[in-house]
Length: 260
Length: 321
Ligand SMILES: Cc1cc2nc3c(=O)[nH]c(=O)nc-3n(C[C@H](O)[C@H](O)[C@H](O)COP(=O)(O)OP(=O)(O)OC[C@H]3O[C@@H](n4cnc5c(N)ncnc54)[C@H](O)[C@@H]3O)c2cc1C
Image 1 (cartoon, helix red, strand yellow):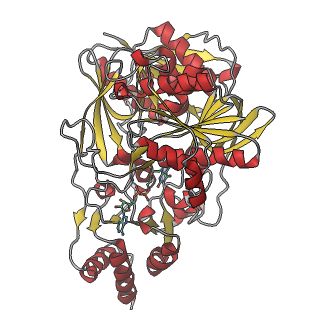
Image 2 (spheres, chains in turn red, orange):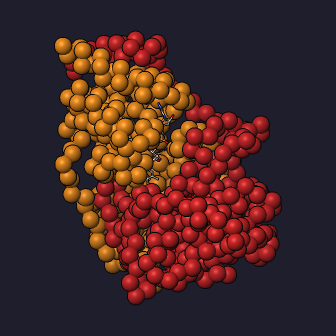
Image 3 (cartoon, helix red, strand yellow):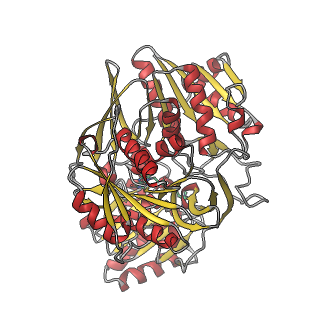
């Protein structure tokens, strides 16, 4: 069995978010990056299937040089090889452009399963995975909270609102975009990190994949015009002072509510 | 000008409130010359389609088929594509709900269309459609522009539901549903276990900012106990296995409205906010002054929670005498 895992590297959850000079994204220089948290769950689910039987796990990521770090981490956790699409011509691509590149890889690799995270923690689009599936002719499911595989049929539980779950069946090959919390994500062991150095990492461009003319700002149908700090309404009344002063004032508020 | 297609959503036998919110956005755009049409899919949904036609849906295409009786990504994608072809729509609006985010991207990819998700504002920019949406889990907003055929999902609750009445009509649509690989099996309703947060007067919720599971017993629980309240949590706390799911507040957890909600080390992502913003009084303790939680809080403390919460627990205990 071959499993493809789509990973995105995103600004670290504790990174400072300063708006870039052109106002169209955040300042990415000198901040820490990490694998998108939803995608770590996707990778873990693939590695669990590998542990349970025979599987080759291929990690795929699109982005600049820094992305090799994310792919090395994935290899250190147990992925067998990596594909890095590193192509300055992809700058400014929208979700559809990204999906076309990933769909081209899916067609080239013909995996039995494709895993991705439900959404990215930076753009919060939650768009790419089902788009990849549609373009590659695969069925898909999202917000997946459990996966079981038997005789070429995948049964998943999708998360609905308020804790309800929807049980869905799909044939392989298919794509699953997983929700956070469906497993406990492993850490890369020291041994894993050492072994990762010898694992293969292919570098490709969109043109190598035959979709060079469908990516980048020129092909994008969606453009981010500006990012900005959300307008703050009245917001909260801020209480300042030492911890004890703050506590005393808060107790005053709680008394006003009749709760003390 | 173009045609808007609203894809309405039926949940538990009625049209979701979120669909009437789509109607509100569509009717706003109708003001700048767009025609409004809708799609209602399911089985035995004619009556609902007629209701929607009169409450903002315009001409409602009704696709009825056995394959559409329950949600399936393939069947809903095919029905929407058939409705786009029949209506000539160049803007498709879908709610960003668990089914919406599952099939809307497939529709966009099949149409080779612009795709924008989870928007809270939609406007006509003359030749393009402008959207506003949150990024970085609510820490920033983005203004985006989409051109050509556009598929967009809209955040539930982003605008009040359309309240007016419109002259609409319904038209049957033969969606010609072909092979469906994704198959609906069943819906499992979560059984509620020990903790029912919806009945608590006071909830003290902890987030990822707590940093470690033992901090819940050391820091959060004592404050909840002192106030005679319950402990809650944000999703990452539950995902990490620090607390069971029944403690989770938010769109995929419990929706709570206590008299007092204290959010500790929680940033305030929209999925958390929808679960607690109806609380009577909200206190937020967070070291990041820009955390979106301060937007919904009545009182905020910008400080290290490990300084403030123990002091507050002591002060509450002292006040009780
Ligand atoms: C479909 C879907 C459903 C979801 N459902 C839910 C849901 O039901 N409930 C939910 O909560 N989330 C839900 N989420 C996740 C949501 O998007 C956020 O990821 C989550 O709410 C973030 O949790 P958090 O605020 O605890 O963590 P973070 O966003 O990481 O915030 C941690 C906060 O702690 C603060 N902090 C850190 N250390 C300290 C300190 N020492 N003192 C003070 N402050 C500190 C930081 O400044 C930060 O603001 C859902 C997401 C999706 C996509």
